[in-house]
Image (tube, rainbow, N blue to C red; front, side, top):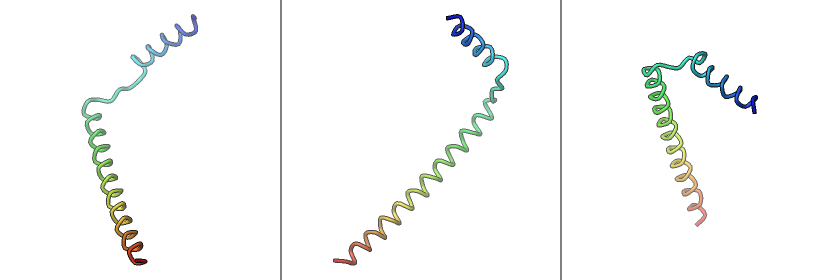
Length: 64
């Protein structure tokens, strides 16, 4: 049990004193980049989906 207590104590100290936390401005910039990247990725995947869907529709209708 003392190993577990020691682990949590050391973890707590490390999180308080040794970890460098980003500033609010850095977090906002990072969040903005993630949001923009996610939107770009979603648009690209959406366009690919539409393109493949239409091309397969044309392909399948050519056999009717």
